Image (cartoon, rainbow over all chains, first blue to last red; front, side, top):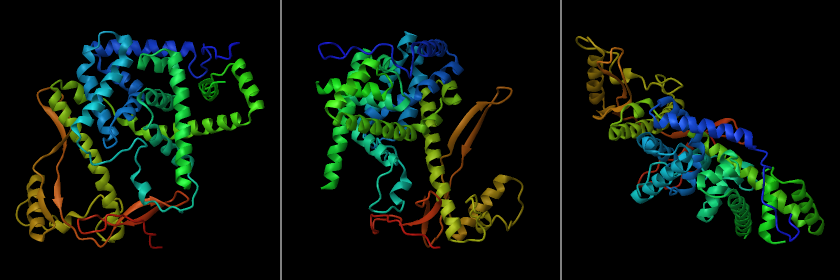
Length: 211
Length: 225
């Protein structure tokens, strides 16, 4: 904490992703990307496996509610195969993947075609709606998590993505910043505010449910 | 302290990034206002719930691979079409398997097996060959003809769903794996699906199939014991 009451910028204290492993991971990712751009199929597959989870989180943050996540991820996969050769800078693979994912999500929204499975941000469990449950049962942790995912969909654009990226794979702020093209300090602030907004939304929902 | 600054301290604590200075500030704030501790606990609980739900919801994306055929066939339109069909097959297959299990279990037809693998081809006449059968195609044609006569087969869907394509050993041809679809008719008294009871054990639950005339609500019904 600074003497003026402000908070010092977060430094190297990211215990989940210290600098060493992140650098190795980044180097591996760049090698895979170079190979994939050059036409190495195995490298492309590895690149996809490395990034597909957070790409799915980007889709969750941007896709229309009625669009199936699996279908959309397949669209992204096909686009990656088709366009990887156009990637000029292997270091920019993350923002490039994000752009591909957002474009796919927006295209799906424009098409307006409802798919057979209505997948919400909270994922889908069709058995859930038919599962007998006591009316007065306390919500389980999983139910609470799904409810929070629904509420996260209501967050403003700039806060939704960082929060979901942090939650999906515990990405470091540096990694999230490299995907979104933002400084780490901005990522930290947005995650902090996003969590605050989510808490307030959850409290509001509790109050409304009690009423 | 501004709200955002407290939020940042809480976020650092949640993410394991809080320094000794940050923790000292949190403790100082907590001594002045115990609500800070409650806020920290709530934030940690919410974050854990969100992570768990996200993890479960996105677990299935690990099965979305870049198919070899998609990469090999740079005729992207064809690749895209195949990908869509593959997904459609997967979706359909899952539903069909679940439906078949339900039907086999509750209609108690002696000829279906418990896995729903077969509605017993004999019902469509395969087991009673008439005339010369020389190939699988002959048997299939006989099955379709007999099935139509019995009202159990409606028709074979003309389109076949391509699952994969790869060059043969000598590279002269393409070996394709595909699904052939046959539309059949059956009469069943009830539909069931497998759900879970409160202990997580598999339990059948009767469901109502929605039709334009039926109620739009599917209610769970306690299964027969």
